[in-house]
Amino acid sequence: MAETATRILSPLHTRSTPSPVKLVTPHGDDDFGLLLRTGLEHAGMRTDGLFVPSGNHRTAVCSLMIDDSGDLISGVADMDIGKAALTSTSTSVDVKSLLEFEAPRFVVFDGNIGQAHADELLKACRAYNASSETVRGSRPAVLTVFEPTSVAKSVTVLSHFAAAAADGTKKQPISFTTPNAVELDRIHAAALDYGLVDPTKIQPTRLASSVPSSVLPQTVLDKAHDLVQAGIFKTVLLKVGRHGVVTIDASRAQHHPVPAGKVEVVNTTGCGDSFAGAFAASLFHLLAQSQGTRAVAGRSSPGDQLDLAVRVGQLAARRTLISTNAVGEGMEDLLLKQIRNT
Image (cartoon, rainbow, N blue to C red; front, side, top):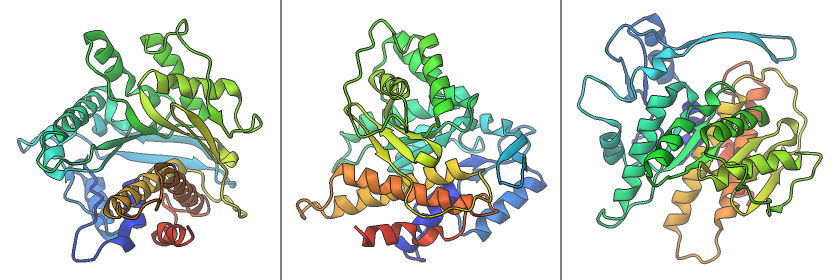
């Protein structure tokens, strides 16, 4: 996600300034860790957020077996280090302090960080946003994006909301999540188990919908809307394969078909991360751009910005589909081209 976001935004900032995308992640004191740092530098990414946690931890690795059509057959992954630490333990900087120092517009994370760290991160984001209104000159709230990663890890964030419900803490929904239909089904089932969604209190869905039933059954739309109504997510960006993406919020469900063009699939791995990274980077830029042009009435609406960010995310996923790499080539011109065409 971080590499895609970096490449999407690379033409939009000067070389004399660092990329606005900072990857904060632990790695082991091993050969794979050195390879990771070197690879990120070679890709033009920032490495000031990399750190080695205390203890004996291995750098995260993933080995995948892919068939001739580019589809995943099986894989083995060691991602345990993601649960080791959120920030460097060699400094006194915790997540809340890091947010105050960096003042990010977006925090993008996935299921690999585990339940405890997801809870810590979401609490820090909530505290940051609560204090934003008291900061001199005000500052925009940080928006959160959760990429579920897998069916098993898609429920990583739910314990945070269950704990908040148990102690009466005011919930702050995750701004965006990017599941596929199977992950969404798992999240909804777990939310029922946690008591976050009460089937006796679910109201009939009354959404302004542009989604054909051939793209997504009403039952799936209802599950996404349940999670929004429960205050877990603000907007669900549901990936529906060849049909594109469906966005669901409190009032509407909108279908975003895959942009026209034939795709020769080479590799299906990495598409979800490419979509999430490109979406977040694009929306970050579009929000910053609109904030700087508020005097121009009617320039663009929040809905227009979301639509464009989703489109760039889909185009980024397509670039990865036709590539042998985890991140497809040619990401750098995607956002600029779409802005010029609007």
